[in-house]
Amino acid sequence: MHRFIRTLLTAAILSAGTVQAAVQVGGVDYPPELRAYKDTLTLNGAGLRTRLGFKVYAMGLYMRAPLTDAAAIIADEGEKRIRIVLTRDLEASQFGDALLAGLQKNHEPAELAALKPATDALVQALSAVGDVRSGTEILLDRLTNGATRLIVSGEQRGGDIADARFYPALLRIWLGDQPADHQLRDALLGRRE
Image (cartoon, rainbow, N blue to C red; front, side):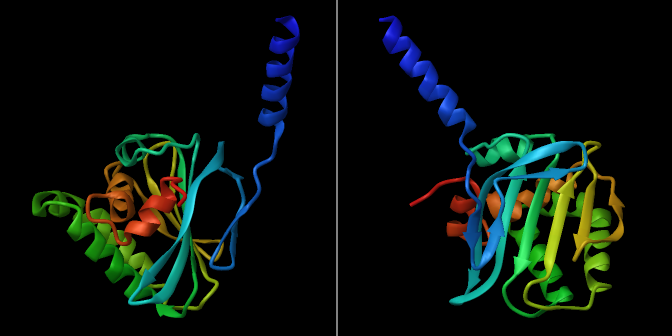
């Protein structure tokens, strides 16, 4: 009996010490962990956004601890990072328009009206970027104070968006009832085929 328990403990210790490999999506590596501000964040899932058969971007979602339930991820108040790497050239305004469409599909008009100042701030910051090339990295971070920060190619764009309701609203674009891409939603939730 003791030998069996010892074997189980050894297996648990070895599996806990195993380093998860990076995930590659559309030629983009997503490390299993990254340091963002105060926390080490863990890759929840990563996938590819396609539209009309074209690859648009690779996306990974990082959190303090992995979750597989969309509502729990949206409600979680910890630091998070959405890491998007474009796989084709776009105008930043096209990306902003796609975000607006995703917000509209997953929110009632009254909710959208309440989020308008935050939405306008993000769209304005994206528009100032201009054209973005394949390989451009876009980070959308949820800070510990609930604010949203946009970083494009390592540079913060615009000021922090203080409205704590905004980041959950952004998450609904990909994890809501009408996600931008159902396969990407499953991938971000850590569901593998």
